[in-house]
Length: 424
Image 1 (cartoon, rainbow, N blue to C red):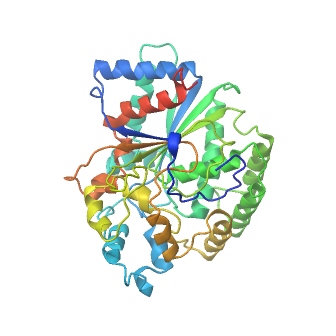
Image 2 (image 1 turned 180 degrees about the horizontal axis):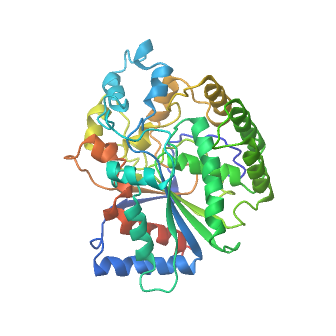
Image 3 (image 1 turned 135 degrees about the horizontal axis):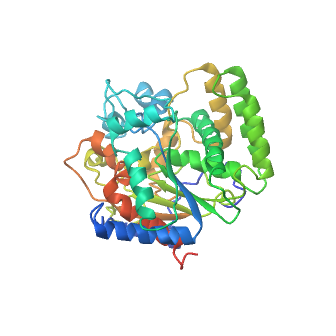
């Protein structure tokens, strides 16, 4: 998407991204916490300090939930209306998408959406998920300490757990709440307009960041006021002690004045985020997308996922093609709103964000096999196959990004793309 994206949806293109895409094979490097690992991380931290990175926030949701948005697929068709007739293997595929049958969720799981971004919830999630699609508190502390080890400078690192209400209304609310949180967080960092923040979002959190880029754009945006208006109407219809229309109006004023984050540049990294919302390049600085991807096509189009039915159903448990959440949780998937007011707001947002409703539309979008977002740089990384792991452990290829063993690789690629002398 160009600047002034105006909340448009991404395109599902099969064309070669060209210079915007790079290909990597995951290399863990030195063992975590070893002297060589610490030295490498500190070197990367030095580049970030020189580039005036003043804070890093890691951003994720709940890993044990309806990651594929199968509830919406069933609501608009699925097996209920016989859309699977004539499409071999679709029934098996839908069984792997549904949380009740895909092996990811368990009835005894202690955390469900909406998740709270507070310390008790962080602690419970760390016990439940550890580093499975979750930036644990120990991960974040380790990252922060390693970056500036032996230095008199620091780069504060934090974590944010979004509500995981994974539909349009929930993601817009999450973008607003995150922006309020971010504004408070940066207030203690003594930032100037020459400084930078780095946001790293896993999975569906990346959709929240895409919305944020459209909210923060410096260009014209016809739909920005409309987005705030729809959300304000919903908040008025469903009052809560945790939110108010007055808060929203104040935030809108700060956004329009471009003072909400003191003019600091926000760099964004997404990990396994599906191609859905478009990005506004005037709302962020650097933009980089990591995707767990294995090149198993036979037509030479290495930048595309392999989306052939019925084979995909038996490939998924073995992560044969990489990250299947990133591949399949595209337009048309979502949770289903649980109140009439939320459903109406969701319809209003859908008219702006996503003209892809209906089961057949979802099939059309998935078959385009798009891996790379329309904007920013994209790294297609072969993280490897852990066939011995259960879906709950590997989330069908979606859990590899947030593990400590991948920390050095992640930091290295970010620093080289954003903060090396060459990129600067």
